[in-house]
Length: 255
Image 1 (cartoon, rainbow, N blue to C red):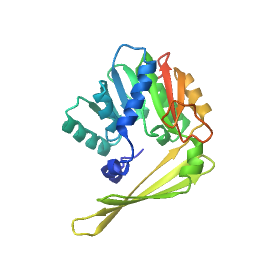
Image 2 (cartoon, rainbow, N blue to C red):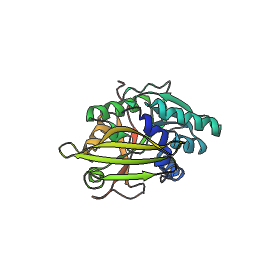
Image 3 (cartoon, rainbow, N blue to C red):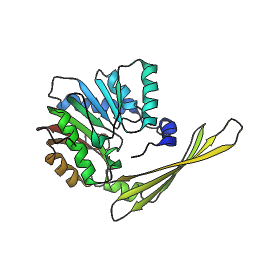
């Protein structure tokens, strides 16, 4: 869980294929289906550059965005000023979440849970979210599956090219742990036509459905739905992303 210094500058360009409006509306549909609390405070956990925060604020939620990267949050704040939306951003590690009050809905999108490097870290995050959730509050998050780590990300290399940067994304799978180590090499175009080179690296770890569901129960949540690949269908053996929806039934432990 690094600052993603170079990655942050190009994150929006490199994820231009993601329809954030559609994803936000998908989360909104889940919330409308299951929400039981009266409040409208939404926590965008690991909010990155704030794209989901912007969508959810436009949908009428009172949004708090939390991320551990100063660089990512700097971009999120620029977007906030540009849009005029009333979003509050906090620089916090989600393993040490500290809110001012209780939350009605927590959303954690784009495999941010996979960036946690152990089940103990996942437990801390789930416990913190439960601690600050209203009883009956929702926790919606997605995770990349074991299948995606083993058969899609694995030892593959991906390249991306925009007007301002060329990126080589190399993955290395650690079979014993289902961790994918990711190294990103950036070649940034300068005004003189030459390129400068920089790199960022991080890793993602896949967790089994059984482990995720047990931790939710342990930390004070009731699992009420899980969907495959941003649909309302059940996950299958080849699902790449599972979206979990859980309801807080008791407040968890704050760490």
